[in-house]
Length: 265
Ligand code: ZN
Image (cartoon, rainbow, N blue to C red; front, side, top):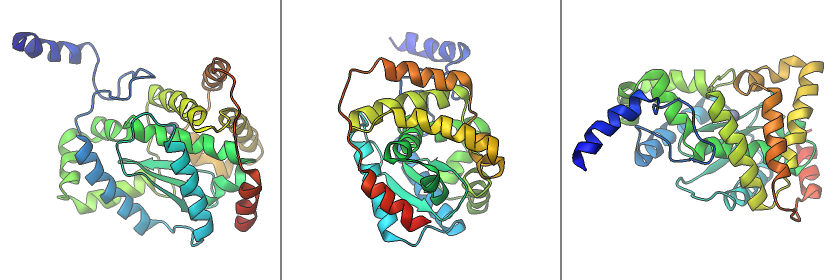
């Protein structure tokens, strides 16, 4: 057995099972050099930095609402390994992002752009799925190397951490994942919405709403599109996946959603 292990690992690595290589949609435990515990530590450092650099929306009602939606979506996640946090950033551009360790941020501009609760749930489910499949730490180790990420976990490089928080998650942040990670986040996001009782069509209608918004007013969406390239097959995959789900009665509270949206306008 030991012999097999000794030879199997390098072989697997040669075969392309390295971080950042194609991920399988259902496999959330892909190859990751960073342990769960390390990711939790790194996530706390990054989220503290993000909240130093960006203003959180000073409205407890909106914050509580998004937090409640996040908790409900987590009921649709098969394995919850992090202490998730859900916060609203005071920023009018349409964007949302996940910091490693389960820290999910939604811009107030995104809540304004959504047309109903399931559209907002769709974006949140997608970001939660990046965290569930730990795409952030996989991508970081691939982009910056394991040594640097370990230093950040240990707090040895606070200046680099601050710089990375700006360039990855800041107002012009571009934490970009591979295409297969994006497609996995869509796939898991639909499953999560379905299990939590949100209509997964919300993800689909929001994608097309964004496309038309982008045509009429590209400025506000530049960041979202640079990190989430909208491809025709992305939309098609989500469509096909939804079509295969058994029928179900969904529940969404649009009275509350509208009240929250009015508070933002
Ligand atoms: Zn994404």
